Image (cartoon, rainbow, N blue to C red; front, side, top):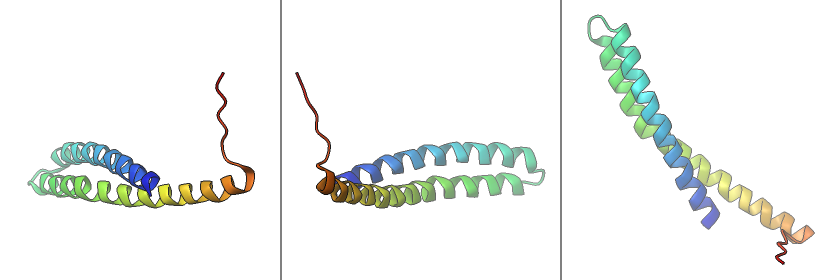
Length: 88
């Protein structure tokens, strides 16, 4: 479970970064497209939605993929012996 939690938090942070970038792009393109204010309003709405929704989606998918990856590692490590690290 620790791998799933770490992966989920990491992906949520990545989603927050992408959400912030998408917010900036939405505001810029909304300002360019909006002559009567509708483009700016759409840009703000899309930006706020992306900064809330993307971290949640990325975090959930990161948690699931981390849990699945750790589970598969444990299954196959039991079969072949896992990773051996040798130090001199």
